[in-house]
Picture 1 (tube, rainbow, N blue to C red):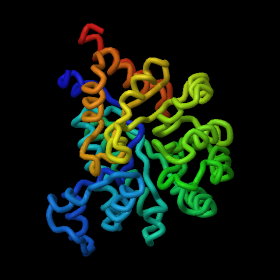
Picture 2: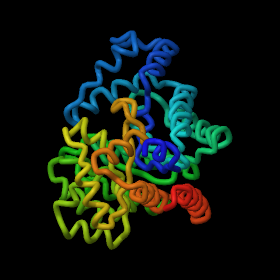
Picture 3: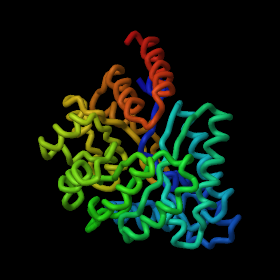
Length: 336
């Protein structure tokens, strides 16, 4: 089964590019940019990754970004992820980036997006991996800052497929950003939002995503299972849920694999993703292996998870059909 998972054509929909900053690259960029770090070896950097909550993770996550300063830095960051994704047979990825985490410390928006965009184009030419960018707003900043960031993104509209909302959910409900997301919708962006696992008011935030914001997808969202009405509405709309099991284990102590089982049984479009793979030391392949080992998933169920992901990806129909055909051909080689 490990071999089957390795060869499975994959689609990743919940991946923070800043969360792919591996210790080796972090140290190299720090040296290149003259940024002092408290750690000098890969082992020391990894030893500092001790998280037991979303809040404790975010402290290390934002601190790590200090080494990202120039366009080549963002190019190297995205290239490193896409090279690794290609090795795991990721055929398509939608990549979150957090511009406010950079503009708030003086790095211009265009420096960030130009580096990322160039990496995406080169990766498709070099490895055949398709990828698109999703711009996330940081929910613990003011809504006015999010609106300003949205307006700053408009000259690069063709490079960004959608917008999302991430960071610390406590006291920062989706409705705080209703006006920003309404404007993003008018500008042609697709919409998603993080509904992090086991947060305060989780089910209410999912309800707001559905009723106030009108999202096209939900990131995480496993707490929807606590409310049958939410489950029914997510199913009715055919919304995707981008679940990150190993990430869940780090920040909640529970990988929520039982929730993934329930979502599959309920016919929801659940997908498996890596979230911040450098910090959680697991890319999408390892996440699929973890779910398989916990639930004893069949090959057909693993194919279904990837089918879900390609179906809810923000792709033109012709490209989606080609990727689904590739997935179906792979399944056929296994007699599925």
